[in-house]
Amino acid sequence: MRRAGHVVEEVLLTMRRLARPGVSTIELNDIAAEVIKSHGATASFLGYRGFPYSICASVNEEVVHGFSGKRKLRCGDIFSVDVGAVVDGWHGDAARTFFIGEVAPETQKLVRVTRESFFEGVRFARPGNRLYDISAAIQNYAESFGYGVVRALTGHGIGRYMHEEPDIPNFRPTHGGRGLLLKKGMTLAIEPMINMGTHEVRVLRDGWTVVTDDGKPSAHYENTIAITDGDPILLTLSKEEYGPEVESSA
Image (cartoon, rainbow, N blue to C red; front, side, top):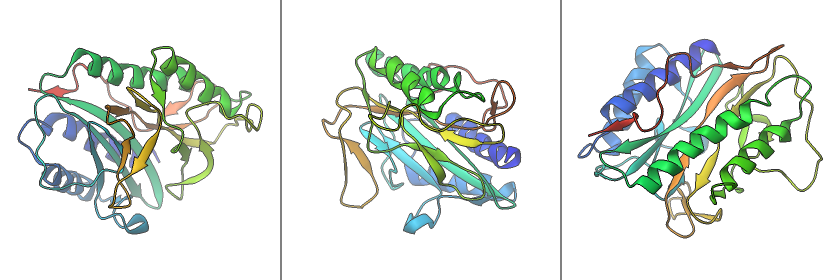
C-alpha cells in the first residue's frame, strides 16, 4: 500500500503542476493515466462500476466523481482531483483541491479549512479511539466556520479492494455511539467533502457527478492512512506538502 500510495501522490503532484487556465480536464485525465501506467500500476477508478476515467475531475460546485471532458479550466476555478492506484493488488486513494489562477479569498478559505479538517480528524486515528471520534472532529472543525459537511458520501476502509468496510462519515452519526474500536493494522481512506453552503447534494444526469444543491463551491481532501501503535502513517503523503495557497497555477 505504500507503493500504491506513492503512485497516487505522484499523480496529485503532477496535477498540481499542470492544472492551470486553458487546460482541459480530459488532458489532465490522460496525463494522470500515463503517470499511473509509468509506475507499473493500474488506475483504481477506470471501469469501477462503469466509471470511464482514471481520475475524478470535479470543478467548483462539483463535489466528487466529476467526468473529464473538453471543459477547460478557467482562472478563479477550484479543481478537485480524486485518484486511486493499484499495485500488486493493493490500493491507494487520495484527493486534493487546487486553485486555478487567482481564486476568491472566501473560496481559498474553504479549501484551506477542508484540508485542515482532515488533519483535525486524523489526530484521533490511534488505537483505543473510536471511528466516529475522527468523524466528530472533522464535523466540529468544518462547521465552526459555517460550512456544510456532506452527509451523502463518506470515506471508507481500503486495502485489497478500493472500498471496504467501514464507512467513515465526516460527521457524527446519530446512532452507533462512537463507532468501532480503532486497532493497529487498519487502513482507512479519510476524505472530508466540505461545501461553502448547504450540505445537501444531488447527482447529475450522467449518474456520477455529485454537485452542491445550492451551486456553491465544494472542496475535497483525502489521504489513505494506516493505524499503528502510535501516530498513523499517511500512505499517500510522504513528501513535503505545502498549503493549498501554494497548490495553485497562474
